[in-house]
Image: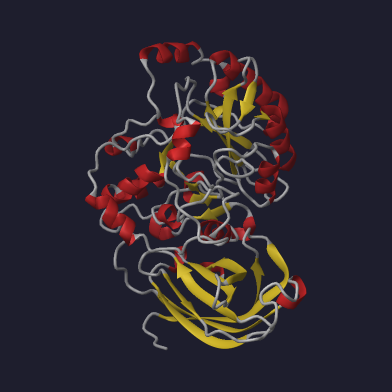
Length: 487
């Protein structure tokens, strides 16, 4: 944990205060507490003036979400920030405040966090400190003071198309080759804004922003967010004397990985990059986080209330390294040789082979009602096992259906050739087959391949929210073989 922050994937939340959907749910400190207890290390707060323009509220702006007081959120962060992990919590602020309210926020931050607040000795850093250096610290990250002029209205958000969820577990994970083809066929145009933090200032707003440029609020911003130029060559330009953080919306990022994939990897070797879900994801669904991790993106922001397969991957990634919220990026992403830069979309050679055997499962009879799956007979379970990773590794297979058994015995072997095991997650799901309706969900887990221990293991499954089921476990075996080995 002694390398610069830019060398780590960081467990990152998006709109951390929301209790439900992006449009009309309530705002509360409770989701923040839960995220911190689950190991999340990046908390996002959207700051807006109240109706009287004399206090600060936290809410998803210009929607019908009900606000929560900022001081409640800050108190919750102080109390729970280090309950699960000693490593730093980064507080990203989307600031829509006037200079006088920014001053009020600065006082609240200092009064609440005191010595826990990390304050950089200079306005710019040549290199980020390490998680070890920042143990027990709260770090503020946002743009230098400015006013935000507008954001999408609630009606515009409501009218936007949202990707549908497939039951409680969400759509299947793709290798994203289709996305690459689709984006490469589109006119590249400008890498436009998706949220208010990316909108340009007019002359009057710039003048007002300068009024608060040298205030205490600015002094507390330890990791400055670079204002985008909407020119990807300029946005991803690496300054050898200064590190920074850049924020990209999901849509702009999808374009960037097609045209500037190598630039992103070089940028993230020194700087921080955060990508956030597009605003049309009204239901708080998520995107495939491996699109970010495969290019070294540290902060792949996830809606923690958006349960489903995409969030399961995020939860799986951050089971690594003891669940502390920081996972060291593999060496393949830190190689700066221009002739050897990693390309997650390439046809990569196989490095190793993982054999997974699913012997049996048990525990559903203790955690579920007798009639939960089938009213008149025992359940018909099958297991799905696969890999989420780079395009060359992504696949999913399944066992046969074991009819009428609360203790299914599959004895099924799977073999997965892996080109980038350093970025691979083992996916395990159990479903109950239903010929007449949608198959029922029976549990899931995602495990970092690089932390799997060879041998026979008892693997605990989780519910669709990622919480461990009390009794449900699978008996499995993991074996690794050289790339030249065959089944």
